Length: 277
Image 1 (cartoon, one colour):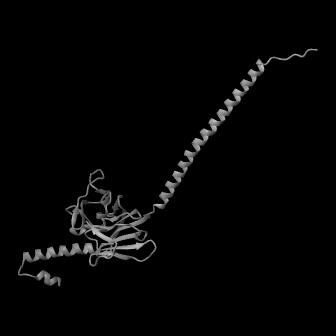
Image 2: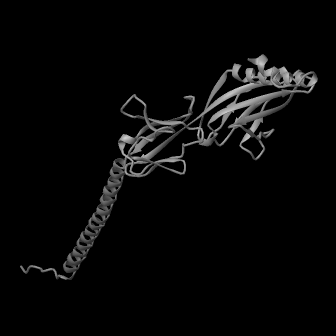
Image 3: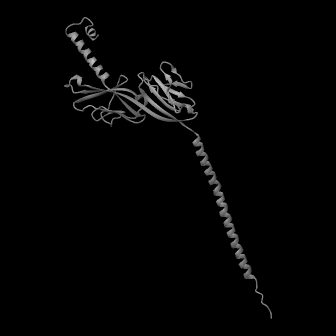
């Protein structure tokens, strides 16, 4: 089949050789990409992750990073204002991770012009991003996870082991309590059954995003508030009692002091009777 492709058309001589050379370059490039092992990398939303290059730094001319068929600008140092920068010879660091960073990356390392073209190195990465959130019962759960390359959303409850498909590009929303708006999966009134792990897969079955959702119960908060109120009430009750005891003690002390003074005064003013023999 390849020979037929090379022989296609009426070109001959140098033009035919040039076409064959172009096809050969394309075949070599595809063989590099398909033959390379995909490196799985995981990072937490808001954190940073490193795409390890693991290529000898000698004679590296430049590097190129692509994702979603787009070239991603790579800063040469960490001091750049961008979120993606080069570290070491060709490691790539992505900081302040967001869900849209998830997916496949292809790193191309180019050597100096005097190096043969087959010396170009290609690395492929699959970036998975995870996050954890807590939602109160009755509140809205919103997951901004419907990336352009998302194919399925699956849910595993905290009480189960099976993965249930909540959304798919083919069948759409399969969870009756779930709606879609602006790329978000929304559950209007969160319940304990909605807790668990949600994962987003691409069309090849690679995990793009994992979100662990826990129930933030209001019972503990109510108990805490109730305890605080009880303590406050006890303090409010104890303060007047203390004042009452102190006031009563002071009054008793004043009363006894006055009584003592009156008794001494009476004794002083009372004449002493002498007996006549």
